[in-house]
Length: 174
Picture 1 (cartoon, rainbow, N blue to C red):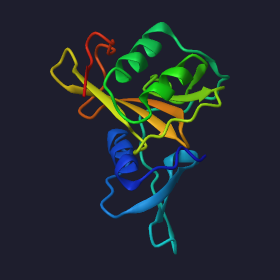
Picture 2: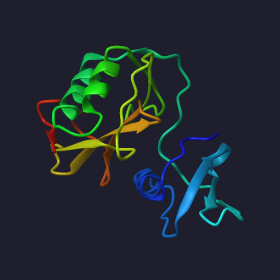
Picture 3: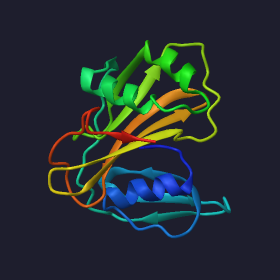
């Protein structure tokens, strides 16, 4: 199953968060298959290394796109508060965004928007926020944009499970 295509920093962060694998070499793509086997395509493009199986703690969800829940919408609105290239276009897109949960713990949402307005962002993650969990750990919230459209909302805590779900009021952006 292809999970996502991203730059090596984002994928390494994602894999490290899922406690699946530590990655130190640049790569351009990865796939997670049945049983947690991870295939990584190196930036050289010549090889695909099969690693695993790795004991990933999360299962993958397959469900239809749905309207954003209010807390999800609030998080995205908070991420769109600071000025950055493409922010205004992303605000327009937010009017039509729907989501589907990728991981059963809700920390990874695939976003789809029915907008013709493209955001001229400079990076795949043009905005991010952080907050502190009740156990003192840090929670990061990332808005991913692909081809000028909102694509993913990712909520990460590197040092354990999330104790209290972040709210827009908790989030520090900028």
